Image (cartoon, rainbow, N blue to C red; front, side, top):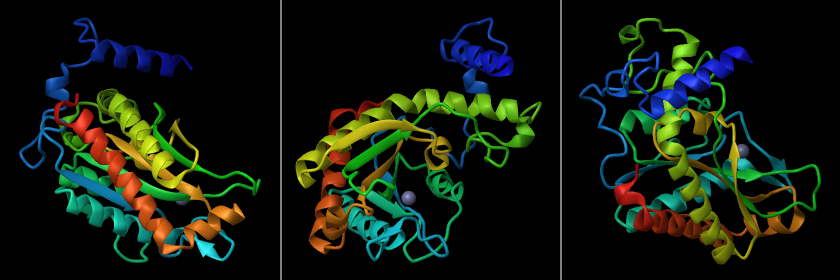
Length: 262
Ligand SMILES: [Zn+2]
């Protein structure tokens, strides 16, 4: 507990620019080598779309449907919608392929993408639960296996410990979190309208969100465990509407806040 408190104090002090903070100025810690564009500085151009699960990981499976197939289909449609709107959209997977969790935000980090959107389908043991949810990252512990933030090389850090890694990732999250929250609620508003479903924007500790260098959200399109929602998700028209709603939410967010964010 004590270590966590000290860590939080360091992060708060650093983000407030407190001169007595026991860390180097952020510009030194997070300076970008040439291969990384300075994050969050310009207009939004590149959006990475992550189709959840894949390969030997089917995700949720109920009512004859598998999450990995539904997410890939919706992600493909979302890409087409975003490309039509003039953005560069890149998918973490384009086939039924397994990608480890950390490898997903890593694609966006490597590209210097402006937004990261992961698409999932929900399930609950209570089969009556239905509706959409959009998650944004909650402050949480990074794992030992987490990569260093993209602008930092372990060799550049004096003491490349897990604590230092945590501090650096907390700085990244401090810069992106309010935008992630805004993006989540804008997508939710669009899904409510477009799909006529309930939608809540919530914080969560997901690795795919925690390790993204840019504003990031995870969209749970609906509950495959709910019979009626499974029937909807099984229809290509509904998946097309879901993709369109998510895309419209992203475009609204970019229009409202994107060009000037952070
Ligand atoms: Zn999932």
